[in-house]
Amino acid sequence: MVVVAIIAVLSAIMIGMASRPYGANGEVISGQLVSEMAFARMRAIATRKVHQVTLYTSGSEQIALLEAAPTVGMTYTGTAWQTVEYKRIPNSAVIWSAEAGAITSTGNNPAQNTNLPYVITFKPDGTATASTIYVTDRFGTPHYYRVLVYHATGSSYAREIW
Image (cartoon, rainbow, N blue to C red; front, side):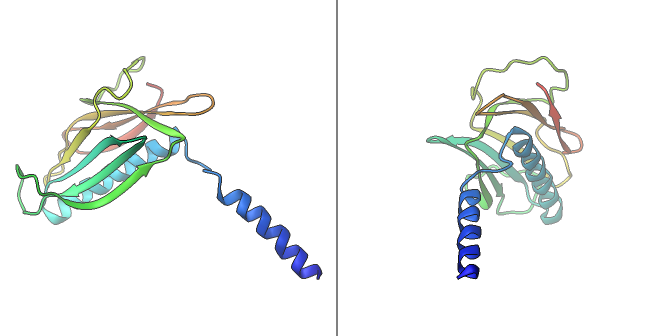
């Protein structure tokens, strides 16, 4: 009976912990977006196909969609992209806005979601659409993060503060 009681207590603790979105804040989401951009760049180079990451809102959810062109080459003008990854952004963080160009200066105050959906293209030569993605916490004290994607190298970095 003691063993059953211990198992019951541990189960109750684990069920309570499993329902909480631990770690889903602006900092974690900006890090995950950087990983998504790096993955898109790596796949574009490895497969010799254009890849794109689309950030958009669907109902109350925000989505990061990674797609690949069906053909090899430096450009693709068709509309039939192949889905590689589909990720939902947790409700505890929000992609505030996305803008063209890697904005490295601080002190920005972008309007919310004015540029979504937003597409970042990665080419097989390693270049990308220069972009800045603003991410913040939805609940509690807001923290502000920028995800920068550089054109010439396709590299992406997360920076704290807008």
